[in-house]
Image (cartoon, rainbow, N blue to C red):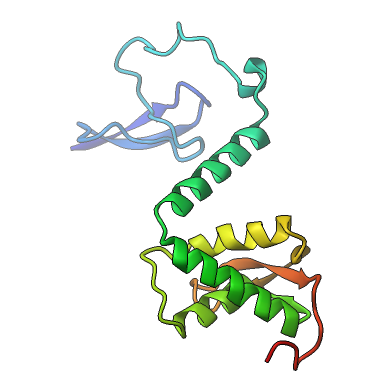
Length: 165
């Protein structure tokens, strides 16, 4: 096998490649294939943007979020959701701020079980619509979820540490 200088057809970058190729090498600059073995199959397809179709990317993301939450809610135990809402309300009475993990941990101490704890997100949104909590715009790292960020919620019904004990 010998080395050969190949020029990328997209960005013009020149680099040494080993011939014969087992796989078409990628350009080190643009990360696209260095050699085009045939006609561009996608050249005749016009580029369509979501905004050209009257759909904003944020709208699409919002629809996906809502669809996912509907699927999670449909597949969850209704008794679990009711108890989670009750636990969330109790936490909101006792704490000025909370995160979804507070509700998840409270639910793990009850007899109610679910196959998917993501339903807590549905419960949080229901409580927000009901005026029990609202997002603060701040985030905290989750302890249960691989240190991913989770929103901090402000309680709108906070009554102090001893409320509804």
